[in-house]
Amino acid sequence: MYSVNLNNLTRQQFLDEYWQKKPLLIRQGLANFEDPITPDELAGLAMEEQIESRLVSQIDGKWDAQHGPFEDYSHLGETNWSLLIQGVDHWDENVDALLSEFRFLPNWRIDDVMVSYATPGGGVGPHVDNYDVFLIQGSGKRSWQVGSNEALKEVIADQALLHVEAFEPIIDVELNPGDILYVPPGFPHQGIAIEPSMTFSIGYRTIAKSHLMSGLADYLIDNQLGKEMVVDPDRQATQTPGLIDETDINNLTNSLKDMLSNDAVLTDFYGQHLSSAKHELAIDEDLVPFEISEVLDILEDQPLNRLGGLRCLYFSHESALASVYINGEKYTLSDSLTTPLRLLADTQSLTQELLSPWLEEPEFMALLIELINLGYWYFSDPE
Ligand code: SIN
Ligand code: CO
Image (tube, rainbow, N blue to C red):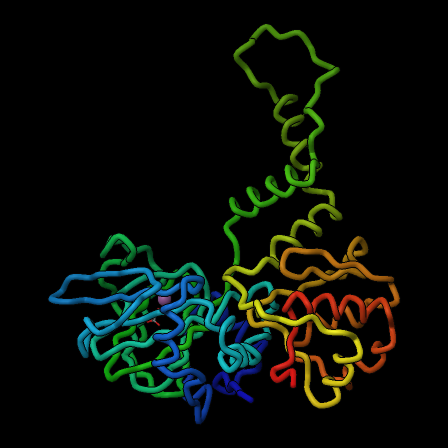
């Protein structure tokens, strides 16, 4: 549906030269781009409790940021404000489809599509993000400045708005529909709408090392692992009771290293942790459970789609060969079913053709039905 051209670079050339290194302006990266969602639809989403939204304005030089949900917008004027919504890929199929062109990075590295609507003069101000982002210009025009990645002083513009001090731009451009600006983490940037304008931000995520550690600690505790005490049966008498000596340090550090060298434990932790959805999933609450025969019938004419924002991951590590991690849960089937399990993770849309070798495998079909009945895979039009 979409086709992204990264200035005629191959995906790998883009990764080698720009990814996490320097910003890139991509004129007409998405030629003939049309907004996959309207400003009105966006305003409707921001009225929902479970959707993360923000209204940012700058009136007479004073910044203000409010978190949604919002009940009405009638107090807002025609200029200097912006509405931003996280995880729109979870709620809108057409926005989710945008991600297909950005999956040359793996699922676990993708965060979400944030969409903003800004009136002339509107924007969130100068800031630094700690993640990579492709800013796709939708309808309207926005001017963007990007600075170099030197350290800048942070400024609290409002309780819910962290800015940085003014920066010297290394990129200063006006974006038109279909233009894309790639900004790596740490590069200050700001966009200011010239006309009522939509921006679609493909955001990637990674994790702070400290959070990786604390996530692992939580995993170990939840799974009753690593409960063995650090012991010292070979203790020698000391003359310097205040000292923690090298032997003790090595003993403590080796205990940590022991846990970090257990591949099966780490794989399971990564699978659970990285497959958990970051924003609420739009699970159909009125879902009527499907039977296998109905699924086979509908598959004749329609593909099964993966729910927007659902993370589905697998490993090539031996301890997880016939397993797939979906939204924080591990699902394991017989070794012979590794291929269809991987299909669930690598493909957004499952057609009858793709699934045909396994449609009569009871074990695989039982899992597929379970996933459909959890609302994780769906038919756009279940008839
Ligand atoms: C915006 O869409 O206005 C903000 C996007 C960003 O700077 O990351
Ligand atoms: Co930003």
